[in-house]
Image: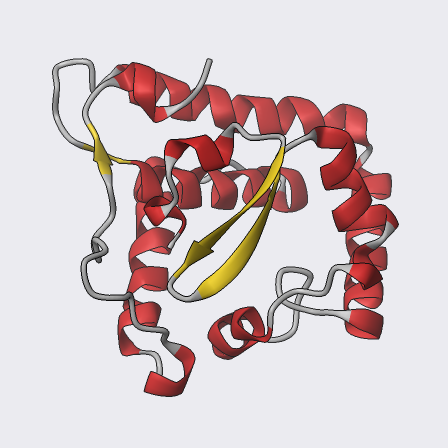
Length: 183
C-alpha cells in the first residue's frame, strides 16, 4: 500500500496520514528515524497487521517482531553487521543501489517502470550482498518480487486487508527515470 501514499509522504520530515482507515505516522528525518527504529523501538511497536501479513511468509523476524522477539532479532542482525563490518557492508549496499540506478536509466526510452518491483528487488539484492556475499541478478530479484506478490494474492483472507473503494489496487508505474529514484 506504500504506492498509495502521496509523494509528500516521502519528503515530509514528520507527519501523519490516514490510509485505508488506518492512521499512519510518517517519519523521514534521519535522527527521528534512528530514535523510532533503534533507540526507542519499544515505544513504537509495529502494527499487528504487519505480523499477520508477514508471519506466514517469513515467520517472526526483525520486520514484524516487537518486544523481546524484536530485541533478539536485532541482536542477531547487529552481530551479522559487526562481523561483516559496516565498512564492507556500505559499499555493497551502494553497489546494489548503483545497479538499480543503471537499470532505471535504461528505461529512458519511456517504457513503464514498476517502482514496487524495483524497490523490493533492490532490498533483496542488498540483503543478498551484505549477508550472503553475493549479488542478486535482476531476474532473481524479479522472481523474489513475483513470489512475494503471489504470496500476497494467495494469502488467507484474514491476512489480507482490502483497499478502500476508489483507491488504485495495482502498482503505480513511473515512466521517467528521473522520477523513479531521487538522485
